[in-house]
Amino acid sequence: MLDCLQEYNIDANIRLLASARSKGKVINDLVVEELTPESFKGVDYVLGACENDVTKKWMPWAQEAGCVVIDNSSAYRLDDNVPLVVPEINPEDIFKHQGIIANPNCSTIIALMALHDIDNLYHINRIICTTFQAVSGAGVKGISDLEREIQDIHAAPEAFQYQIAYNVIPQIGGFDENGITSEEWKMQNEGRKILHSPDLKVSCTCVRVPVWRSHSESIMAECDQEVDLNEIRQALSHSEGVQLKDDPDQLIYPMPILTTNQDDVFVGRLHKDPTDESGKTVSLFCAGDQIRKGAASNAVQILKKLIEKENQA
Ligand SMILES: NC(=O)c1ccc[n+]([C@@H]2O[C@H](COP(=O)([O-])OP(=O)(O)OC[C@H]3O[C@@H](n4cnc5c(N)ncnc54)[C@H](OP(=O)(O)O)[C@@H]3O)[C@@H](O)[C@H]2O)c1
Image (cartoon, rainbow, N blue to C red; front, side, top):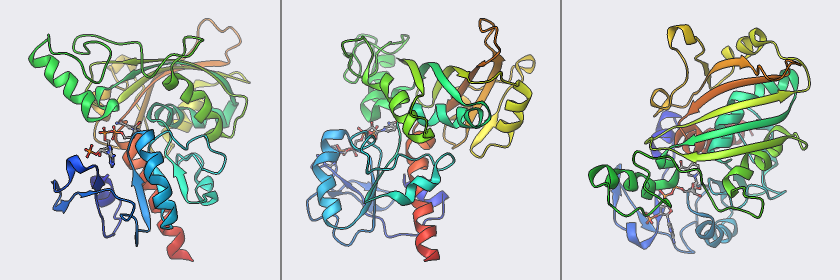
């Protein structure tokens, strides 16, 4: 977040808030303060990055103090009064906020960055997706699980259900009665809201992989009309925040190692689904840094739009 604020030239007095565990820690010359009900007094904007239970505890304090909160948790994402925004896709929703703007789920942001131009061209009605999600998607604890297991393969996992080093785990979030996890529902629920596409259907399998950073996704998108791959390539090559990496003969395709620590989502491996004779289903692979575009950069881009609007007024 701090790097992004600097890169997006946001000039602000910044305060860092966390739990008592982090009180006094120094990050980029800023001393971390313990979050209390008084912390938000005099603050204009809050960038939230806590788990849902913690967010729900402090959100009323921030609202009471009149702050506009851009929140990374999923606590308020589906609330009717809370815009859910990817600035390249639905920037107009930002200004409908009533004090809270939600940042979408990281895999959902990355998938929709790859898909929204295809949706504009042919209207996507169904998505089938498998995600390959980096350990840092589970926060600091996810990174330390992989670090410890690489050093000692018998180290007990803390963030994940099983050893993640040299393994993949087909579970992110808890399962419901249909065998679908909470993470897997997010792409449908949040995708409908961001694309303003209430009938969008998504079947998703979320998989944790031993990658440090950047989520990758294999996606099939079924559209209302036959798709034209050249038209899609043309649209993606002009899409803000997207880089087309689609030249398999030259071994050019998206990989998480290429997207780490930058904002663009890479899209490639474009082809028509050979099992759909109608030609309406496009298949692609994409990757994006879930800490940057999937969280911090997306939040800071929203903040930048709010500040620009305020400066125009
Ligand atoms: N990691 C990702 O790629 C990613 C992407 C998109 C969205 N998200 C979402 O963003 C949120 C944060 O995830 P993360 O990965 O950044 O988690 P994280 O690395 O575990 O960080 C959680 C933060 O919450 C703070 N915190 C915990 N308890 C607190 C309390 N009682 N009072 C004040 N602060 C408290 C922690 O401070 P201490 O260090 O003091 O405990 C820490 O700064 C989650 O809702 C997650 O789903 C994460």
